[in-house]
Image (cartoon, one colour):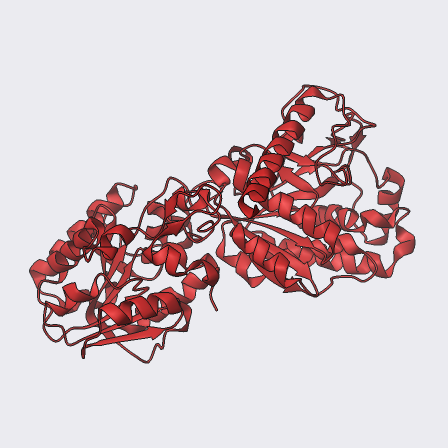
Length: 542
């Protein structure tokens, strides 16, 4: 039940000690709560609610994610008709039930996505809870609360706002809370959701927003209606929208520019080698991802998964999905299963990485969000002659050699290494369908490929020329190969993503078998961080 439900324990709600540092941690306000006091944030939240609603008589209230229940007594003092709170945490339920038992109060263990849309309320509160609801579940939640809101009702949102939705915050610095804030909001992402569901920004203060449904405007008095529209227009004018209440998909896209909300995914096998590789990738994102260190990560495991591995990935805030094998004859093609996930439709940019890669620097500035991106293959592992045969077989015009291999700069047609692929959401469904078609056909016609191992990369080339999608080549540092036998020519750069293949030792550290001092420096950087973490872990276990 729920993402990372095991982290929503008594230590989180009432305060605990970080296992590695012995520092205190817990949900904001736990110190005050233990002394029967209320953290100022809850006081400020209710002050905002009261200034917006004013008259609470006969109002029925729903709070999504009540936590410890600090807002309950504030509502009870206002002579409401009833309070209904839901939270997916059994621990939260027990704490709130113990402290706030009252005839008007009903508490329930339930996930937000499972709300009963047959119920209706005058006031719906989401106070610092959106950031905890997975991105791919939030659309369902928005639809349900929109349908549950009574005519003339209001929605109250309290939310921390970030510079970008992929960054890490203080909760991501320790394993006990890492990944819990899995749906971080910028002003743009939050407004995109509100406007996309036809809400009016009726009241806005700091980190609080009061919403009404656009269709309910006529219910309110003329003065209130004018006040709500004035606030709405004032807020949107700051973003370049003037006197506007209807928004197209392109309008909403402007609210979340560039790469927007990103998801990183990989597909792995359920064996020791691939589990170790996958864990290194996830750890590297959290350690060195910079402005992407808090990005959502989805690990797909083929056919079955070890429960201990799921638990370990949960420590690092990763989602886990079990997927079917794409091909029994070509294992690398399994990576397409990540792109098939319905969850990816909730993100602006989808980034697919091989398990044998690690991030060692912040990659965000290279991710454009409006075009397909990949790095050219280090070598033409599918020959030009083979491609001539393939293009002829599929009745595609043979393209010119307009690209260069990333190792030595040899001329070739468009042929990318599939270790790091970045897709904007807009083009992914159509392109994926074409790519899958060519993979399936090449698997069925192995004789067309001299090196069958590179089947999915050959199919990627065919799909690219068949679809003619916008493309920008990633610089080599975004998929930098560790290969002791080959040195990159041209300008020397510090890798951002290292594609190490099988060059690791029996302890899982990246091999230093390279004369490339830039690559070597980044290998040492990663190995040092991994070693330090393992030392901390060993010390804690002792």
